[in-house]
Image (cartoon, rainbow, N blue to C red; front, side, top):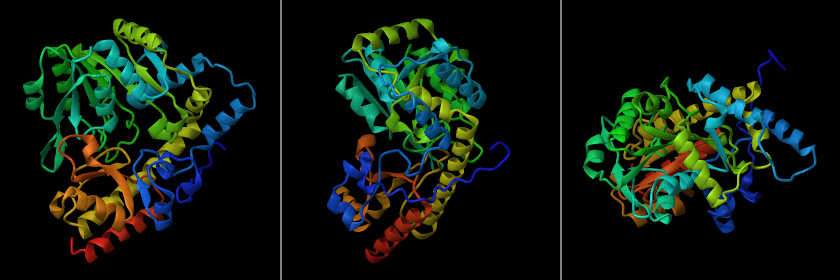
Length: 400
């Protein structure tokens, strides 16, 4: 009811062990679950979604017919209005191209705006599917490692200038950055757009984590700066991360340049990628509602506390583990290199002794075999249990 504060129970154990959850059924075995192995890999949350989303989906279910679906203006208005309200981005409904997920949009863009053998710049450590999708489409990856300056990851613009060639067609820009949790500053985004314009490169800006920004830091949408600079940009967004609905397959490519948008749509139609999932509109309307926004604010606070707990615990009790400054996402990029273990020893330590399954750093770039990505969008009690488990193993192995 309006005027009454809603209390959300993010401590509720949803016990996904016997569900069809990807990370609970595909990434680990049943005997590993029996031993207590806990997956902190795939970027979804262990929490119930907002009641507003459930109600919106159930309302659609009651219609009873599940044929091919088209999106109404309500969908586009909801996306447009939220981007204006939350991120001060002005767009038209026609600028919104719906797809099942961001990687589908990435695949379309790579095929529309580059050819086999063309080069794509990807910052590393970077989301693993940036690498796999680009490789599978036979584009050449130009890896641009982030620099570490004052215990924070930063873009190495000099390195980017040194690798760019006339065959470099696309820059995949993750903003906020997955896995490091960096929120790029106005200066960073401006320099990215200037770089892209200077070299006539298309920016594909993955902004899926744009609602999980903490510490009073402001998210700068690349599109807003790209317009001013005059660079080319496609922005990818989705309710998936923000509202824990990634399995429902709805996302958007925001393309304000008519020429780029027309070519993107033409390529999408040629590739026959599916879109407009039967519940896509219901999810957007439920998520981007007043009740949905209250849920998102609440889960954001819960996760922020989880991040602080994890980071402070590591700082105080596990000093050889390094987590650099992070202002976004419910992921933590953790560096174990000071333990001086081999890659195999590190994996065995985490999986067989600490009983946690985390994302291997090798999937995020060429230089990160001693790093792991942790998903901390889990119940607080489980977080404490895992931290204690790690600490006890480290004590036993004389690693502290």
